[in-house]
Image (cartoon, rainbow, N blue to C red; front, side, top):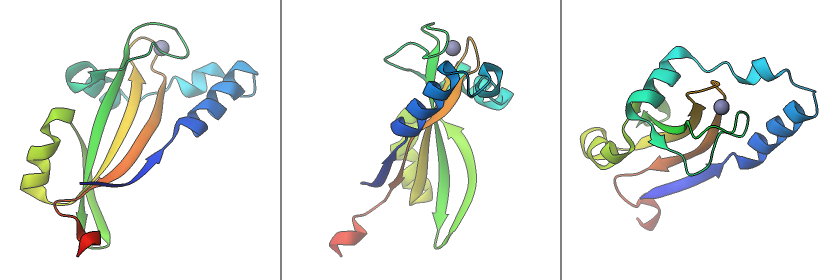
Length: 124
Ligand SMILES: [Zn+2]
């Protein structure tokens, strides 16, 4: 089950507004790490919207998982979104982060984060 979802749309909008208002240099928000761009190319899911910066249909969503081990969170890696059920079976509770990246201009921003739990611990 999914729990504790955080949506980062407001922060994203604020960053974009600052860019369009000239408060952020556009090159400062087009600095996606090469690994993120690579993950977007190979395992990213096409986003429903075009890139907010360059208007190209090259926006991808990349899913990162981190293993939850008690209070500790271990090693994140990019995985195909459709593999999440298998990741959960194999590793147990996960923190999941969805990051959008534009393959054209390298804009990137966090979209959402949530916990993916093997069982509903809240229900006891
Ligand atoms: Zn772009």
